[in-house]
Image (cartoon, rainbow, N blue to C red):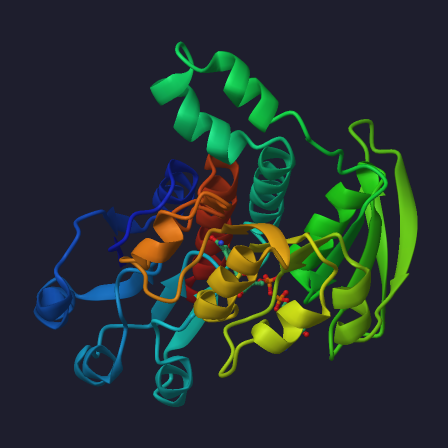
Length: 316
Ligand SMILES: NC(=O)c1ccc[n+]([C@@H]2O[C@H](COP(=O)([O-])OP(=O)(O)OC[C@H]3O[C@@H](n4cnc5c(N)ncnc54)[C@H](O)[C@@H]3O)[C@@H](O)[C@H]2O)c1
């Protein structure tokens, strides 16, 4: 049987599928040519990440298609319910990238509290002519240890983020309308582990208590953080969005940064991907990455292996 990995797949996944007798096609087919390609090559499994869209046109017109697989979490690019109604299995790998996203959150947090996002912009320009001025500008760093991290959405990535924070000696508070309490297992390198309980509190309390806020909610119809929520935050708070564009109101974010209500923010996701607003890109108080939360070798390998395991289970 043939698998088309239209947005690529890690070698771990290719190897597992080939060992189980599948033929893996790594060609990238343009969106409007997919229906023809899937039919003429009798593709049974279509694997995508976020680039390829799998809408009704493909679902209705490709009778050989048995599985649609999304390497990652969000399935906004697939008509999931429609495909399932038509008897096509839709699979994803929700847990594979949680730790990678959580580490990216801390990359931003560690960077921001020591001004790395600004220093890396200015050292190449002024490092040899204004060394002392730059040193003074970045002298008021703070430590994360002992500070409070507020997590909005304490699902898989929220929990992975909480574990890192607890390991650093941060206090963790969390809001999640669907979870009252969690028992986190924090594992150490030698397999020792400690358990830590967190009872969730209201969104307002999280916003009031937190020095740093990290968002880990699914895509929503409304902003989770807009001007009302910024007003509730501590003066000088810092916020990270590595969830989905549209979770933070970007105009309200820029206003909160300009007024000094919040001191810094980090964005891995944007309302207008792949062309984020210039007012965000040029803001010196923003630490920015181009939606790379899950983009580590480890996460991609886990994604590949998990997709392969599910395909083999379903089709063999
Ligand atoms: N930056 C990246 O590259 C990257 C990679 C993977 C996932 N993500 C995104 O991260 C987010 C979280 O993923 P996850 O795997 O932890 O999902 P998850 O489903 O495990 O957890 C989401 C949690 O948010 C809670 N929630 C829902 N609505 C909420 C609200 N309004 N306020 C507070 N909590 C709310 C849910 O109850 C759930 O516990 C998703 O948006 C996902 O698309 C981003």
